[in-house]
Amino acid sequence: MAAREPEIITSKEKMRKWSRAMRAKGKTIGLVPTMGYLHKGHLSLINEARQHADLIVVSIYVNPGQFSTSEDLSTYPSDFYGDLQKLMSVSGGVDVVFNPYDLYDYGSGRDREGAEKRDSVKEVSCLEERGGGHETWIRVEKLEKGLCGKSRPLFFRGVATVVSKLFNIVDPDVAIFGKKDYQQWRIIRRMVRDLDFAVQVIGSEIVREDDGLAMSSRNVYLSPEERQKALSINRSLSRAKHAAEEGQINCKKLQDSVILAIQEAGGKVDYAEIVDQETLEAVEEIKAPVVICVAACFGKARLIDNIEIPAYA
Amino acid sequence: MAAREPEIITSKEKMRKWSRAMRAKGKTIGLVPTMGYLHKGHLSLINEARQHADLIVVSIYVNPGQFSTSEDLSTYPSDFYGDLQKLMSVSGGVDVVFNPYDLYDYGSGRDREGAEKRDSVKEVSCLEERGGGHETWIRVEKLEKGLCGKSRPLFFRGVATVVSKLFNIVDPDVAIFGKKDYQQWRIIRRMVRDLDFAVQVIGSEIVREDDGLAMSSRNVYLSPEERQKALSINRSLSRAKHAAEEGQINCKKLQDSVILAIQEAGGKVDYAEIVDQETLEAVEEIKAPVVICVAACFGKARLIDNIEIPAYA
Image 1 (cartoon, chains in turn yellow, cyan):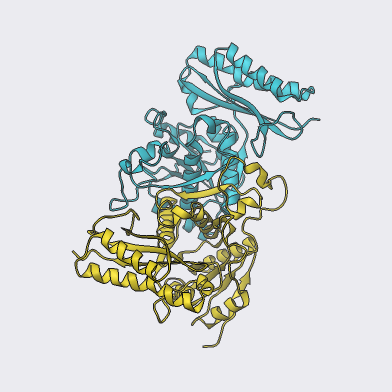
Image 2 (cartoon, rainbow over the protein chains, first blue to last red):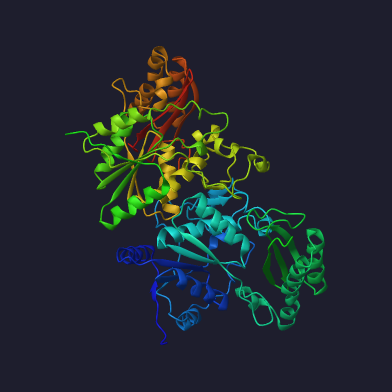
C-alpha cells in the first residue's frame, strides 16, 4: 500500500473545523493522543483506532502541564519528521496529525498573568512556572493519588486536563490509550465517565520489544548495559503472574519477588504494587482481577510496566 | 403567541441524541443551566439565549456536587410544574427542558464505592457524602478562592464540574449565565477558555424586582420585614457606584460604606469587596474596570449581589 501523507493541522480552530466537517459527512473520528517520538507501541494504538473509527487523528504534543519543574520537559525526545515517516508506514495511514505549538496560548491581553501571582500554590508544573494564566485543572481525586501519583503529584492533573482539551478540540468518537500507562488509562476512563464526555475510551495492550521490554519513548535513555538489566522488570512481572497462576495469592510475597529481582539487576524501584484493576487500591490477596504495576529507574530512565492478573482462584 | 410545551428529557442518552439530531439539521443550540424554581431572572436568560441560538435547552437540576453537607440541599426550593408554566409563558417558548434525575448515577457495579472510602478528603459535598464513586472535579484554582469561595470552598468545584457535564451532554453552541452570580460567570468563562470547550459563554445582566432587589430563588426565604431590610444591599451598591462616578476611587472607603449600610439594616455581611472584573483580585484604587461583590445574610437567606463599575478616571 502506498504511503499516504497525513494532513498536518497546527491550530485549534482548524482542527475543530476539520472535525465538524467530517462529522457533518457522517464520519466517525478516532483520536490517538501522543507526545511524539513514536515507536511501535504508538503504531499499535493507531491500528486499534482503525478498528473503531473511519478517520484517525494522531495528536503530537509534549504537554508542559504534566511535567513538574524538576522533570525532563526540555529534554523530552522529539523527532517530528521521523514521526511522520512512521505514521506514513502504518497500513491505511492516518488522516490528520494535530501538532499544536502551544495548547495553553490564549492570546495576549489581560488574561496573561505572571507566575509570580501563583504564590499560594506550592507545587507547580512547567506550564504554571512560565505564567500565562491557565488555571483550570481536572483532578481525578482518588485514582491520581497512588502509584505514579505519589512521586509525581501533578502528573495526572496535567494529563487529565490536556486530554480534556484535546477531546474538546478534536471531538472524537473514540480515543485510544496504551495500557502500559495503566494508571493514566484508568484515570482517563474515570474522567470520561464522571464528566460525561461522549467519547469511548479504549485501552490497547502493551507492545514489547522482542526481548520483552515494554516499548517507551524513554527507552532511548538506556545504555546497552542498562537495557539488559531493565529486562528484570518484565521478567519479574511474568514470573509473578506465573506464580499467581500456580496459586500464590499473597500480594506481599509476589511484590517482594518483583522488587528483589529488579534491585538485584541494579534498578532503583519507585514502587511495585498489586492493586485492584479498577480502583487501583492495594490488595492483600488476589481475589478479584488485579494488576501489578512497577516503576523503576535504570540510569537516567524511569521505566514503568505492568501485568494484569485475572482472579484465578 | 400560543404557549408552546417544551419536550421534557430526563436521560443523558436521549438529551445527547436530540442535540446530535438537531446539529445534523444545522441548528444551533443555546443552553440555560438552572436549578429550577424559576423567576424573571431566569426567563431573561432564556430571552438572551434566543438572540444567539435556533433552539433553547433549559436544564433544571439541583446539583448535589455544589452543596456542602452543612448547606441547604434538601430544602432547596423546587416547583417543577410551576417552572414549566413559566417556561411556556416565554415568548417563543423553549424547545427542551432537560431534567435529569441524577447526573451522577453511573449505574451499579464495581464503580459504586461508599463514602467511607473518602477518609483522606476532609471536606466533602452532599454528593460525596452519599457515595457513588464520582471523583472527577474541575478546579479553577485562582478564581474559585475568593469572595463566595472563602466560605464555600467546594461550591465552585461543584459548579464547574456540573456545567462541564451539561456541556458534554447537551453540546450547546452558546450557554447563558446570569451576572448576578458574577464569580460563577467568570469561573465558567475561564473554564471554557482553559479547557477549550467549543461553547460561547454569555453573561446576562442582573434582573431586579421593582424595588431593586436582585431576583433569586432564595428570596422566598425572606420575611416581608427582612425583604425590606435586604434592599440595603442594592441601595448601598448603587450609592457606591455613584460615589465612584463622582471621583471616589478609594476602595476601602467605598466598601466600608456598603458594609455599614447593610449592617445598619440588620444584615450580616459575609463580604463586600471591590475586585478586578476579570481576575477577581482585590484592588485598592479604581483604575481599571471593577465590580463590587456582596454576600450578606438576612434571616435564613444568604443573598448575593454586585454592581460593575467602569474606570471613570
